[in-house]
Length: 464
Image 1 (tube, rainbow, N blue to C red):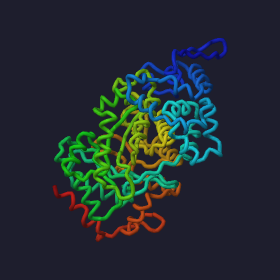
Image 2: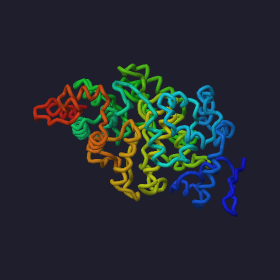
Image 3: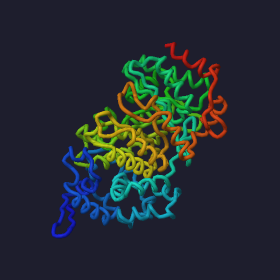
Image 4: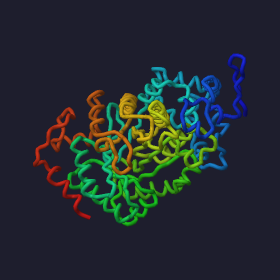
């Protein structure tokens, strides 16, 4: 179906709903690279005006990617909850924006309607919203998950401790792990991006992380971020796997390029659940996403990158993850050119994921060839923390020596806690207090050289 909107003496025409969605997006380099998006600010405004008047039901009648060719589309339509959608079924996209911003639309209301919203609906409404709107609504969304601790509570912010090493050296990883724990980081997950694809090497990483956890009785979860098929083999061989990781995207073609299907993700989740390693809950999955991945894989079907990203959250939602993380600036300036585009994308991703009921964190990051710097990241992480972000990354010095990109540091989490009074996961914070690393208010304490962690943890990395 074609759409049109007159502005002055010119009538803007859009071939179909995909074109309306693409042209309504804020400008970004990925959509330009794909040949999508508005050619002018006037065309962008015309697309937004079309979108504002569009009934939400349109997205249930007009699939952006055909049902027959894409299993993510089938998932979206087959899982749609008509009962949850009923209170909103009479609204347009513009009406939805107004309803979301009402004070009477509270956290409980948003949780109730989440199963009735499709990714395309939330992507559409995000295109009509200013940054402050995205922050305000996301802050009202509550998504709480549990494995060995509790993540996503109001007034809390967790940290993924990321102790990567370019050669997977156990002592180097142990040093970064010790550094992070002493700064009170690691309550989201201790997650290693391995340099090697050797199952034996990665099994050594899983074993070391589990030894640290059990030796010091830490209420945390660990993860080695390798392909899901490798993790299935590791579980079969008896490796102590807590969370199952996988990069996911919003189209079947892109997920195929990652070597995954929905059936494979279900198999992995079932295998992790069967291990029964969680003590507080059964959220066993950890997903990462990023705007531009569908375009990079030539799997976008002419859909703009932000809408493709929102569709990835439908995949995440299906498998009830503990953590979902938009790695917002990692894919490079070809897709998000500068700090302004990265900031906008991070706010969009967080808003869309939370509105769909997905636990959302953000790797507030950029590559060294992007037109961005640490000041841009300071702005984004501050905005996201105000928006109720579940977790950020904790990388020693904010500079990942294995992946070679710029992220956030342990000190950045301390800044956000001090600025906004944000707490760690309660179980993890209680452990830090028992270990004498923080006081009753969660402030860091100086640990003596004789502290157990300082004496024992470095030696764990010398085994294996």
